[in-house]
Length: 147
Image 1 (cartoon, rainbow, N blue to C red):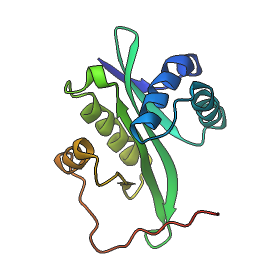
Image 2 (tube, one colour):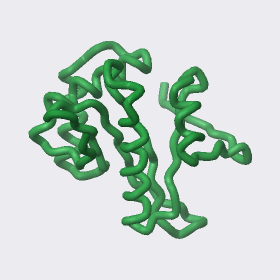
Image 3 (cartoon, rainbow, N blue to C red):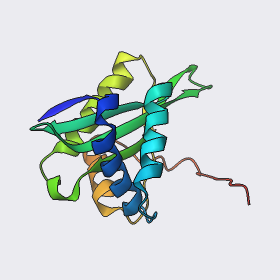
């Protein structure tokens, strides 16, 4: 198993994984939308995407976005997406992807990394604390979306 940064040549395989990830969160299947979104992220270099690969087959990915903490006057990373193919779960790929994300934080001298997951995501809600993430109970998370 290898963890590496994504390449544009991975786009078809990554799009399939990303489509499955979106469906996990209740979105309709749409490979075309997934591919277009990922192509933009890769070409614009506005996120970091790492993949787990076994025998030249992508088994999972993690996508992080740079943000900034004004109070800490530092870069901060948002771990926005983490997904491992359902047939490949339980093999430790997600832990290796998280380790790669932690290395990105250190390598970029960022002050930390944050993430959000659904309360119903039992796998993630068990995984993240086991990997050293702590729930921030001091803050409220608010969201605004246009009508």
